[in-house]
Length: 313
Length: 313
Image (cartoon, rainbow over all chains, first blue to last red):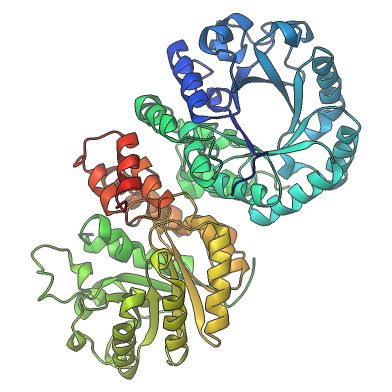
C-alpha cells in the first residue's frame, strides 16, 4: 500500500513508559531517536508533559515531563519531528514554550469524550503557541454514540490538524474500525485522521491496516509493540506492510535486538491471557496489569469470571 | 458473529508437534481432548498419520502416527470429533481402518498445488473407507494463479466435504484472504471452506475473522496459538469472538495455565523477529527456525538481508 500521505508516529517511549514509569535511559532514547530517523519515521513521541506539581519527579522518569533540555539531548532537528503528549487536567499550560523556541513540533492532547471541552481549550492554547495539535480521544469503545458525535462536531470547528481514533482497551474488531473511521472521516473534513491500537487480542497491526484501507493516514506504532499491557502495533510489521520507499525497517531490527527484546523479558508487555481477557470484555487493562503482578493470585478462569461480573448489579 | 454453521477444528497437537516432534505426554493430550470437548470445540486433530517406514518411531513422538490404540486412550466418542492429518506421499494407504472401526471421523490431506492429483487419489481412498475428507492446500502464497484455479476446479469434481485455504507462511493480509476466500467459495459450491492461518505477522486471528466475514465456516485454531514457528490462530481469542453459545472459553484458559504457558517458554512459538521476517517476505519459516536455534548467529538485520537476497540471481 503506497500512499505518500501516510505518516508514522512512533510512541515507543510515551506508551511504553506506562510499563516502567518512563524510566528509560537517556542513551536508549537517543539510540531510538537516531534509529527511527534513519528508518524514516515521521514523528517520535518522547513522552508526556505532565504537571510536576501533580506528578512528583521523584517517582517518575524524565519522559513523564519531557523538559525541553532533555529532549534536545536525545533528538535533533531533522525530517523526523518530535511529538509529546499531554493529558487533559494533568498538564500546566505554562510549561510550554512558544513552538518557535522548542524542538517539539506536535503536541497531542489525550482526552476522554466527556472532557472534550477541556481538550479543545488546551488545544487552542497550544495552537496559539504555534504547535501542530492533535486531539486523541481515548477509550472510544466506552463512549456513547451521541456523545462521540457531538465531540467530533465540536472538533470539526477547530483548526487542529489531527484527530486520533484510539482503541485503548484493544477491544475493536475490523468492523468497528471500519465504522468509526468512516464516521471520523465524514465528520472531520480537512483534518488528518489517525489511529492508535492496542494489542490485547493480537489485532493492533490488523486494525491499523484496516484503518489504512479506509483512508487513515496517521499511524501510531511502537518498536517491538511495546506499550501498556498487551502493547501497540509493532512498528516493524507496519513498515513491512507499507511500500512507501522512504521507510527502512533495518534500524528498527537493530533497536529490537539491542534494547527492546531484553527489555520485553523484564517488563512483559505483549500477548498474555489477562490482557486478552480485558480486551475481549472491553475493560480497562488495569485489573489485568494487577493480575500480572500477582495481586490476584487467582486462576485465569476466576479472573475471567470476575471481569464478567464486575459490572453486574 | 453468531452463525450456527461455524465449526472449530483445534490442531494444537498436530501443528504444535512441528515444534517438539510430536513428543507430547499422553496425559496432556488426554487433558486437552477432555478440555476441548467441554469447550465445545467441534474437531480435535491429534496429529499426523505418517508412514513409519519413512519416519522411524524412534525419532518422533506417537502423535506423528496417531495409531488407533493411542487415540482411544486419550479421546472418547462424543460431539467433539477426532481428526488426523496425512501428507501426500508420506502416508501408507494401508494404515487406515474402515471409518466404522475407527474413532477418527475426519482425515485432512495436506498437499501442495502441484500434488493435487495425488491428494485427490488419497482422498478418494479415504472417502471409500467412510471418512470425512478435507483437502488442505498449503503454501497458497507461492502458488501460481492458473495452477490454483485448476486444482480447485479438480476438487469441485470430487465428493470431499471440505477444502482449506492455508496461509503456511503467515504472509497474507486481509485483502488476500478476501480475494482467495471469494475464489474458493465460487469454485467449490456445496463444499465447506476452511481457513488455517499462521501468525508470523500477528495476523492469524485477524485473518481468520476476515475469512469468517467472507463466509468461511471451518476454522482452525490452537490453544495459546501453539504451532510451527509463530504459531496459529489462538483458540481462546477465536472463541472470544464467536458468539455461538455452544462454546465456552474457560476450559481453554485452564489448559493454557496448566500446560501451554509453561510449554511456550521452552518451545518458543509465537511472535519473534525471524518469524516476522519470513512472513513479511513470503518465505518458508525453516530458515527462521534455524536462526532461532542459533544456527545463524547473525543479527536480525543480516538475516533480513539474507532472506531478501535468497531468491536473487
